Image 1 (cartoon, helix red, strand yellow):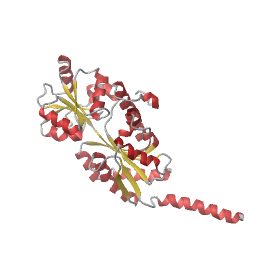
Image 2: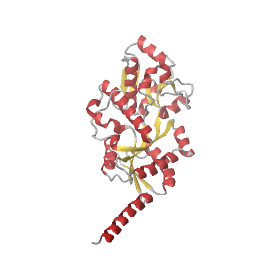
Image 3: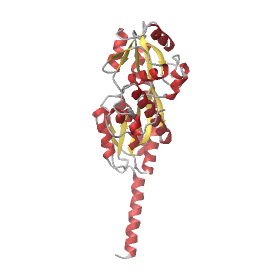
Image 4: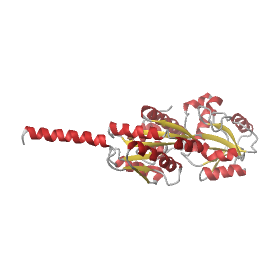
Length: 332
């Protein structure tokens, strides 16, 4: 083969690569939602993605791929080509897979396209509880050890993390943990007086608060929440909470590491623009979620802090199967 012909083939190959990159997306993009239809992650992704499609000029076909606490969906994306045509649409759970013995991969195998929003934890009490704020609850626990009943939903869930956070910051609280199968049953039990206090996500508790059926004690965040501006935030009550906050369940779009930079850039622009859409923002506000809309180094830093704080809180509480040290997760 002549040098001219070889050169022509090389030139054609280079131009084809450039064209492929410029044409992204040249086919349908698959969006793997690691949780079931109708859940929070599903709602967030199906609300924001149509706006992202308009920016991309392409189609994202979303599929719910559930099972193994979300690990089946994550592993599917991890095994796909790193070409930007398979997106991971997930929540916070993968950051705990290794320490909870649920899998050997987490978000370190992925590049965050956008962390869209997060749930805000709130501590709520029965409306007849003999205290009206967080310091009052602490005083009651000190005066009545072993009497206060606090709702729980199992290891790794929001109540377990918030309870572990309180124990770490305040010292072990002498309370009775009462397990329930999810936030819904626990909040129902709280309203009925079966338990006294419940850590929950703001979006799940807000209607009960607004109706006066339960009362808010403290929001676990670093700044006042616009939904309940009169409720104290944790870092104002005790500055030591800043080690672990902001924290909460979150929703994000990811691609496998190794995806071309220009594809990452297009996806990042599409989802960051989509997250600013007024309809999407209104939906998040209405459900009590805190908008994030972060990507790149900022998103990576958030994921690192979230994993460090949560992993060690759960490990110190004796709720993990493996130590965070085994995976190089440093103590915050």
